[in-house]
Length: 207
Image 1 (cartoon, rainbow, N blue to C red):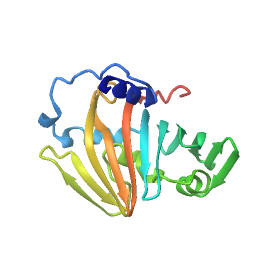
Image 2: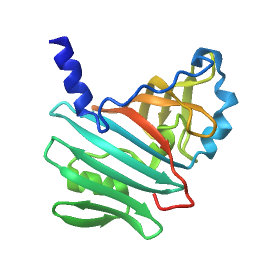
Image 3: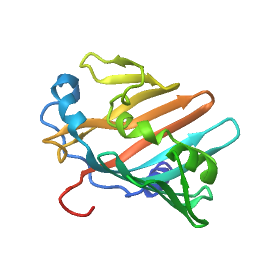
Image 4: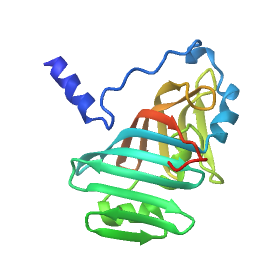
């Protein structure tokens, strides 16, 4: 039964049970966040695959994410078993759009689009930095860190982000420790993001 449950969990992830990430030469508890923060800040072209679980007092749903980020522009493919089907959220200099099986929609913010069309929303305007362990620009924030300076909790814009796990990603900027599991809460809304894969994007070619 345990093996069957584990198999189902693997199949639910966007990329299935991929091979394990290579083990770093130095474990994270021997690495200082300050040694890599500048490289994390400079990382503005990346792709991740993962899964997000959303929970409110009335409901609990999940969705798979395939997210490409280049500078301030992004393309997020959202798919899941909760009835929303396959949706694509995109941001560029021309604005923010959401494409679903019902058509193509526009709004001033990604959050408003997702709320109107999907019935739930993530703080996408800040999430590209939160998912790297960084606070969003400009807005006040409070950060709690571990002994190595890695964030364990970030409070910003009414949200509380708890960093539960980290993963070693040797392909990104010479090797970085990046968040693997984040739990984000605001009021009675809770979102758990599990990053299954991180990949670099070559900005010199089409992603």
